[in-house]
Image 1 (spheres, one colour):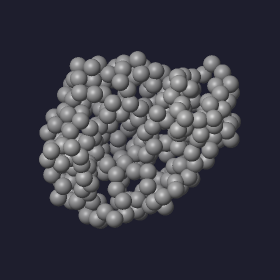
Image 2 (cartoon, rainbow, N blue to C red):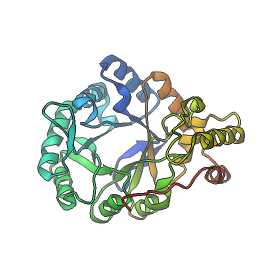
Image 3 (cartoon, rainbow, N blue to C red):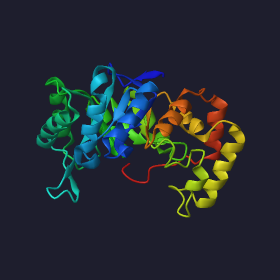
Length: 302
């Protein structure tokens, strides 16, 4: 599987990453899915301390222990569970980040984290303090690089201008083209990569996508618009699967380092890997997708 450089770092991540949030808490099932990803050549695994109260990190770390030096482990920080674990609060403070990283490292069973990401954020945060925390963690050897997970253009610009982030994880797909208008150019200019989540738009851009359509639609698409768009895509791309089209569309943009897709079965992992290995889209094919889809824009946080 092809790899791309993550920002200006020395990390090279596979075009397909495994989003670990959907692995569940059955360690054996999760291990089978992770091993399937490894067999397909995937080297990028994304988790968070928020997932299953940290149990996700434990499961991921244990499964990857035999190949630790061959993989890139990314996790996230900022959402703080309450003592009763019935909710969480946002805490981007330096003190919390520097304490939470030690807990994540312990759960992962590793000596360091390859990519540590702020799991959200607004302009009201103590951003300079947050950046200072990440920079200190790099110098202290707890993490190699850091990034943010955000879809807020104003937050993305702030970190692009002030910090040494390597990446921004954001939702991006042919049905959610918001990053194209504001974020991608800024990140490209600053040598920052995108790690794209939601590339198949909650399953809509898959071979069973029409079954996923609800009367609520998706983002600014109505139910009727979705049915028409999926029909146009199937007709235009013929025998090519919509998953292939969806993943290759996101990977077409040079700022994207990896598409992170979740999987709850070995079959899903294999289908996603096959889609990423398929031939890239031509410029004409990308233009067609842009013509029939909407150039969505962010309505807030601009």
